[in-house]
Length: 100
Image 1 (spheres, rainbow, N blue to C red):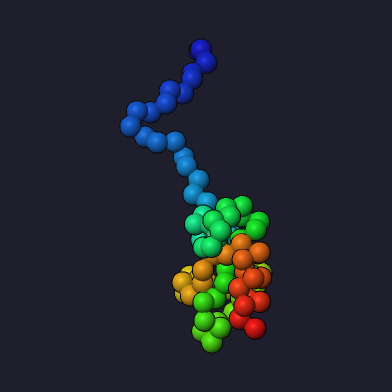
Image 2: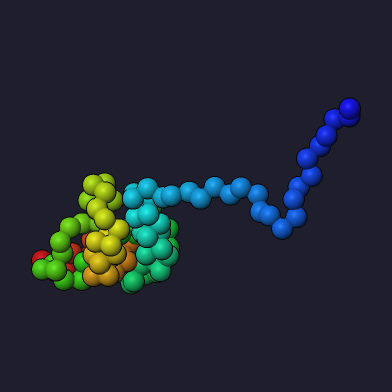
């Protein structure tokens, strides 16, 4: 007998692997989306220069950096980011200097 080869079946998709993101990866993706708007004041776009600034100190429950490091739930991070504006580190420092 000859060797049989398998033919691909029509209409079927190949096995696809769905990747479940870790909590930290989901927060990273959320932050990447947040930073895409750039600095509110100067429009700096480099992701390493951008941070989240809480508009009202009294509403701040936690820092976004803590949320990422400590693995806060994604929904909590979303709610906290809604209270923030995206600023570059220079504008962020200048704004805090004005607030003193």
